[in-house]
Image (cartoon, rainbow, N blue to C red):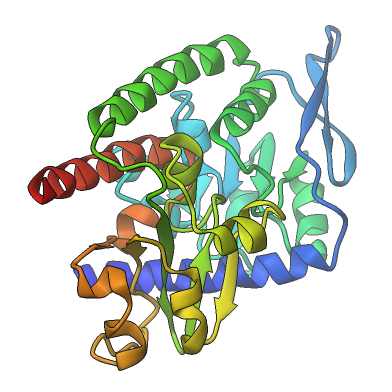
Length: 322
């Protein structure tokens, strides 16, 4: 069961990497925004997207989503269709009953989506020819992967799409309280100047991650406010780069006093290799292993949980160090 889920998430990661490349070749990313006006006669509203203004139902009832399932579930809105890999997330699995699996984000999903008779499609896009087919079915919002770099922006954007701005603010208020509580739980345990890295092997490559959508970066750096090494800040966080492939020889340059490690994608990684085993954090048993199933998702529900999990990991470890 675990291997099967890992294969699903490996497939998801490869798909998202493809979407990043395709998205980089298309229009610049722009967060969808509502013009804050509705046409009372037709009960629609205009949302600004990377494709320009898109007219959508003011109160959509039959939503199909590709890549944003949790963003609807967090508002207690259940789409009629979503890809199976989104419904396999530990954060959405119990909430996905009754949602139709539309398969992968490819041409094979078009007929299935058409049969669901959606009144709104929200997709990470990446394939403009596919997006054109979606637009013929229903109003389509293309929100490229990585559009949102922070939970508050993401919740407010989907609050606008759904006409649930008030609910978004209420959720964020509770979210901020949970973040504050998590930060308080480790306050005083972390010495000033202590740095934390987020990195790991994927396939044949080794990556270091910033404070964006990869591997819990939002929870670690943005919400808990843990300090990154100088190179991580310079090469990833400041330029808003989510992930950077580095050579094995460069790992030590990006390693912090503590390391959050993700090993996934059938990684070819030897933890006994001197390049890795001689890093101070590794030698001093200051490496936290992340569960890919829980730290690959990057939606608001996931980030909320990741904040609490990271704080708990640190609290348990740091209290033992004292």
